[in-house]
Length: 73
Image (cartoon, rainbow, N blue to C red; front, top):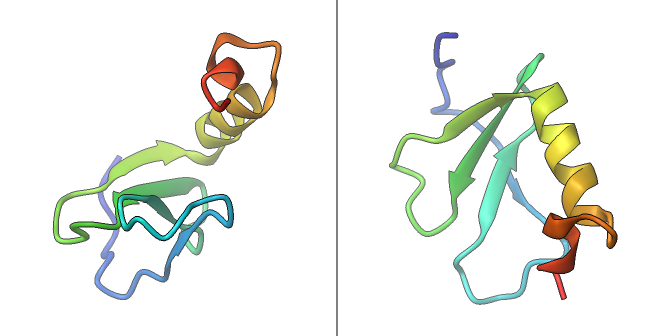
């Protein structure tokens, strides 16, 4: 998988994020992939996963019965 040009990425953070500044951000405008960045330093290379993998991750952390869901509090 090649990294797309992210210089014009529109980064978005979750509405669940606080105002602390240390947030994970995503750029949703790229078909088939989901770039994941660090809001503190967007000059660092993002993690790029498939949309399917990102959807599975979100489902796991949203499920209070899964081990990942339990860490949300």
